[in-house]
Amino acid sequence: MSSAKAFKDDGKASKSAKKSKEGEAKDNDVKAQKISSKMAKSKAGKMFKSKKGHATPAPPEADEPITTPAPPEEEEDYDDPANYRSEYFNPSYWHPKTRNFEIIDWDRWERECGDKVPFNTDQPRRAGFSGNIFQGASPWGRLDNIPEEQIATGAKPSVGFASDPDYGLFYGILGQAPDPSLVPEPFLNKLLWMQDNVAPEYMNSFNRAAWRENTEEGRATGLFCLGDDYSMATSTASFTASKYFKDKFVNFQVSPSGKWIKFFSINADPDDPELDGMWFDMYIVQEGDEFTDRDGNVLDWVKAGDIFRIEFDENLDPYACNYTTYEYFMRVVATIDEETGVITPNQPHYDAMMDAVLTEPPKELREASKNFTDSSFMTGPEKWDFLADYEPDRQLYLSAPRPPPAHLLNNLEDDSDF
Image (spheres, one colour):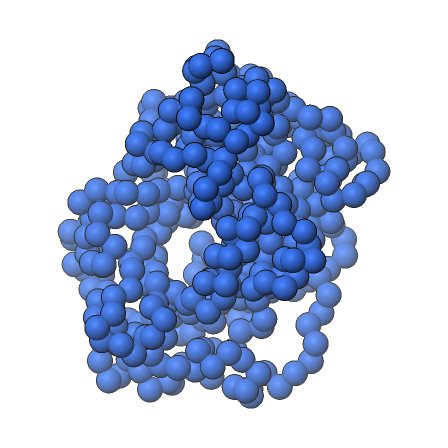
């Protein structure tokens, strides 16, 4: 078969939201099979027909929380800085001395960039996407699954399944915040799925980042380690990359309007004035916003308060916004109760993610790709859509420790000197 067009979907399938609860859990590999039904997808331009596997077993109904709360954390002296990573108490991580970090002038940002949100969404890199997605430095996330024994020796030593009916993976990367009042509302108590992000990373939570109070002049209010509460594929490439993320931090600034969250990727040495970090943006969907796909179809699942992750043309400049180079939604697939620690899946996003991690590619595509080794017959958009449509169920992660309380972070000797 010479062309991926042979697999093009001829119409939108009608999908039922009903889930089967029959069957007993077998082993972790069985969990990777397809649930008995899937919801309708709103994304246009799907290149390949979905193929369902057999339902064994289905996750529980998504509107029913499990009744056992997360295990309580061990008692410790929360006022002792020695119990936390030293980076949280280093002023240079909150206000890096690197060349291009600054406290954002939000008036300037709103004036110059506030109207640059691409409401007609279309992945900028999709058309020219290239490379063999089944081999190379970063292959499809369902390939090259290394054994748990090897994963246990790495920077993200735990393995979980997105479809786990007991939500083990969810509990692993979504914990209770010690002071929920300081966590920005778009992040608060939420497990976020990076839909349409073709990198081999899938879910995260910022609930256990270190958060502190803002000041009148503004400052970084959050500090997060990318090694924690962040899931990736269980491939050799992700195993290797996780070592890089283990000590990689980003800090957050939130606009007074609440419409924008900027985060700054900190270089290895935050005290080096000759280095640059990188700026990234999150737009918080506002009431009345209407997002459409590339064909103009309304994305009716996008609601006010959702996160639209954006990368603009020059990520060294915090005020660059001529055009976007990368974009995707961070969909809330689950929430955690502040008091009980019970996690509840969130619809319709949970079903959409289950569709992505449990749908099997069609047999014809397996044959055309020589058992998922050769993608040379696929166009750039087909490769992109394949990676977005068929994500891995098996993922590796590291649970974040409890962050230090805000009163230990509010008066660091940092912003007052800049």
